[in-house]
Length: 255
Image 1 (tube, rainbow, N blue to C red):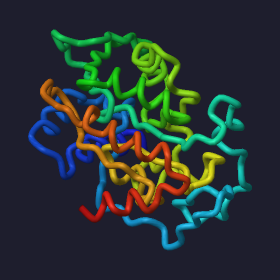
Image 2: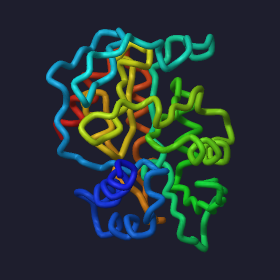
Image 3: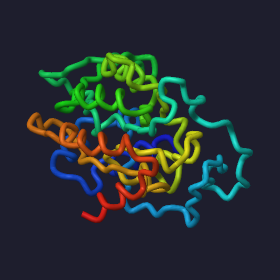
C-alpha cells in the first residue's frame, strides 16, 4: 500500500550519508520514524529556478498536476519587538534534540504521543548547550521553529524545550513542500525578505531550495561532549547585525 511503502522508504532514508550513530538512530525509530523528520536523501536536486524575490510561489508538484493557487504566507506579520531583526528558522530533530521510542535512561523529556489509538512514550535528549543557544537566538532574531516532524510530537517537545518563548511561530510537516521524496522547507513561503532569513538545519535536503541561506549543523544523537550550538553563537551575533546575510554565509561556505 502507499502508506506501507512510505514507511519503508522512511526507514532506509533515515541513515543516508550518516555515521554509525545514525544507524543506531535508524534501528531505534523502527516503524514510528514517519512521526519524526525522517527523509534524508541528501542527493536530491533543487528545482531549476530559484526565485529570491519575496513572493509566494505555488507548491512543487510531484504528479504533473497544474500548480495550486498561491496560499497565504506561513508566518504572520512581524511583531513590533522583532521589527528590523533578521529571521532565523531552526530545525528540531538532530539539530536541537534527538528523540526515540526506545527508552533512554538520561532522557530530558518523556513525551506521550498517540498513534493509532495507542499512547507511546517518546524519549527526548537535549543537545548540549541548547538552552544557551536558544536564549541567545531569542535575543538577537525573530526565531521560528520549522520541523518536518508531525505536530502531535513536535509541539509538546517545543513546549518543554522553549521555556523562554523564543519561537515566535512553529511550523510542522504540513508547511513543508514534498519534493522528490523529501520534506523541503521553502523559505520563500515564509513572508520574509529572503536576504534576511537564515535556516539552521542538519539536513541539506531540507533547504535544497535555498542553500545560500543555510547554516548547516552536524546531526546530533547522543554525544554529550558536542559543542556545536555553543560554537555557533559568535557567528549568529555577527549575522544579527547584517542587512544582507548572503555575503557572510557565502564566506562560511567557502571555508
